[in-house]
Length: 288
Ligand SMILES: Cc1ncc(COP(=O)(O)O)c(C=O)c1O
Image 1 (cartoon, rainbow, N blue to C red):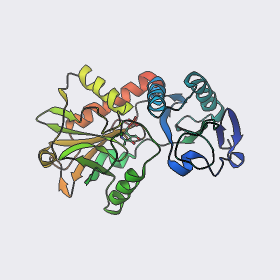
Image 2: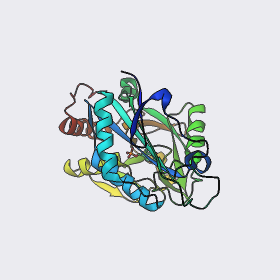
Image 3: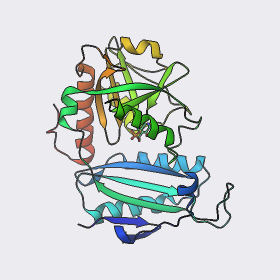
C-alpha cells in the first residue's frame, strides 16, 4: 500500500503532499501535534488523544474542527490499512508572510500520516534501557504538545550519544519527565511520578498507567521526586505512546535496584498489554 498523506482535508500520495515554505510550523514552530498508536488496525486511547489536541489548540489559540479531524483520522487509518502503526497529526497556524504576531489571513495547516510501527523490541523489555539525567531547560508551557521540540531533540541526542535510550529532565532538583516520555520511580513498593503541571506533558500513557495501578492496588504518589532520591529507587521506568512502558535498569551510569527489570514494571506492563487487548483486540504474545 502506498504511503498516503492527509493534508487539509485531502488524502494525497506522499510525493504530492506539499506545505508552503512560509508555513508557521516551519518558521516558528507555531504548531501542535499528537501521536496515536494503532494496534490490530484500531486506534488506542483515540478520544483521549483528541481531547489533548483540543486542549493544546485552545492553549495556543488555534481554531481546529476537532470533530472533523477525528472523522478524517479514522478514515485515513482505514484507508492506509495498517494493523500495527502510528498516526502522526500536526496542526500549525498555516502559511503567511513571516511576522511573529498571528496572521489574520492564514488557515491552519493540518497534516496526518499513518506509518508502520513496531512494539518496543523484546530485547529492551528483557534487559531494560539506560537513561541519563539532564537539566530541564525548556519553557514553562510543557503541558502543551507543541512542535517546539528543540530542547527535547538536543536532550535525546545527548542521551543517544551516551549510549542511552532517554534523557530524564531535572528542574530545580526534581524529576519532571523524559525528553519524549513520562518517568516513574519505585520506592518501597510505591510508584511515584511527577504531578501534572505546566512543566511536563500529561501523557495519555501516564493516565492509563495510573488507572491500571489503582485498579491493581499498587500504591501511587503523583508527587515531586527529588533528584537526590533517584539513586535509591528500587525501579525506574518510562512511558509513552510509542515506547509503551520500558524498564530502566541504569540511570546516570549506576544500576537501578538490582540492575534488572523489576516486579512492579512487570505487573504494570502486563496490565498495559491486557488493556491494549481489551480496547483493540490484539493478542498477548508479547508479555515477557
Ligand atoms: C515530553 C513528553 N512527555 C511525555 C510523553 C508521553 O506522552 P504520551 O503517553 O501521550 O505519548 C511524550 C510523548 O511524546 C513527550 O513528548
